[in-house]
Image (cartoon, one colour):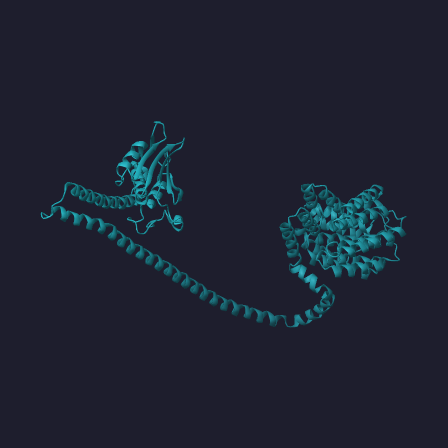
Length: 627
């Protein structure tokens, strides 16, 4: 018998979707074999005369799903269909269509599956295969079920059940159609699912002599066990699983069960082996069932967030262009296909006019789009430049304000001690002033203290400038940590030892006190920290603690002053930030210490601060890697 044009259409559609099929060929092989098993296609039907050749071609078609070559899959299906038609076995010939349909459903290629179902329908109608007509609504039910249209799936399965009644296939396959209805309702209406399980049981009671009895019975209990699991009926679940296993042991059919593997995954989950249940789910042949089982697993272990994400992925696949088209328009497609044929005749007459019109329209649109795009690009560049100018203006304004504030602070910090020095100098040089020796010493001390303040201010400014200009790494050398600490204490502002006591706590136990660093920068940092401690400590003690471990030296300055205000703590190491605006200073000391410590490979940290005092710790590496 010559291969008809419908076979060629099948070949075209099959090859078109082969790329999507190949990634899941191994899993889909089992799915197709399970479907063929449910349809009960024997190795040799009543029409087929060549048993060995029939079995060989059918097995080759099943196994072709696991091959790498797209052509092998197509050739195997076409060869089996050609052989079956030649022998007059139309039912077996239609299984080639089913192979393509289930491949597409397994990959969620709903549109291609629907198209192949319509081609199979035409083939059955033209061959006038009356008893095989139930194939079409049966496949349409699977299409609807896969895309989530449960009412449509139910309608098609019921239509298939009515068509199969009274035929030679009723005893073996009607129960499986009822199971398909129960399975479609599993994630929609559990009561409805139980109803169809009951119908399947009634059908089995009528056909106990069927060789497919125990296989169908094991699947009935498998679906019933899944319903019990979803209802939270653990005792019912274990009862149904036990009855499923009993029926499965009595099953003498060589073909695989449809729903028993799903029930066993739920049993694995109920036994607490989550990882094994997930692994078994990954091996399923149907993407849709894989998603639904994963949702149930994640809900069972309480991970609702992942369950929702998995469900969203499935919904996204269903709501794709194919899913939306099938779900919303599938009832109208047969009428639309006929209408399209008529429209195509009319379209041919105006084809040339439309081509020219479309070409001109596209050209105009391209020119307009190009013009609009160029304008938008220009506007975007203009907006970007304006934004850059605004940002630059903000930076200039901020820099100008910072410069003004710096000059104001400098003027104030220098003018105050200069005025004091100038005033007391005039007092000392005025011959009319007769001063006691004690008064002269106090005046001299005041002049010295204010001179020290100016010198300290200039030193801080010079250190800040040097920090930005000098390469600290080139100025490092071996330095005596204890000696630097003692020198820093000597440069401190004068304090009354009866009011504020200054203590140097050397915890190094006279060990090797050498570290590699910039000694001038270290001295300046300790001087800044001690000067701040004196500034904010009116009563109590200032302690400079020296300690080390295997890697670092730690210099901790602790005072019993007033502490740092809470709102100032996040900005305390920024330039021109002062803990108390009414205290002398520019707010540069801690900023210098913080930035210099980092350049020397160390750090400066605020250990604690409160109304009882403040503690800063400066850490520097013993052997500096930046040298």
